[in-house]
Image (cartoon, rainbow, N blue to C red; front, top):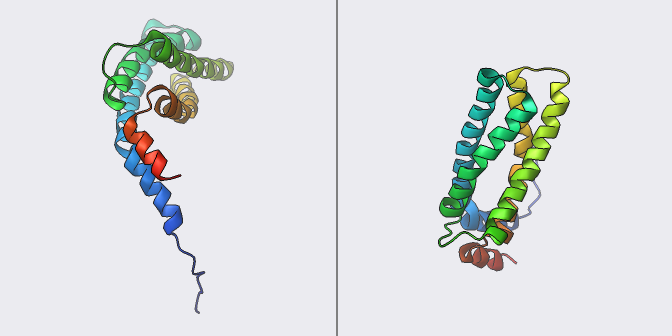
Length: 161
């Protein structure tokens, strides 16, 4: 049996991906690294508050998110986006914490719903992870395109249009 394949070029779909990887690959890897640190710290604090301290899911999530947002901001600003100089409260700290608050509200809402059915620590932790995962991609776009738009990303973006 002979299978005929359409003779369309795949280069146009691959080229934009190469441009994206060239512009964002290293930065995305650093962002993932910060996320790993943030998840380990946040989930560790969440488990500590739930299991050791005996707090409820919502209060535990608020504590975990509040504490883990500090190193997430510092690592994101200095390591991922290579920003130097003084922090700007209005154009950096406030938007970052606003995004952290959006993630927190989403996670707390999800945990409050799930907590009606179970108080299982692994289930509550998985709920937290899933909620933050939804916000993760949008946060990268906002940080990269609006808040800490770097010349390297700008140059690569201009070549693909």
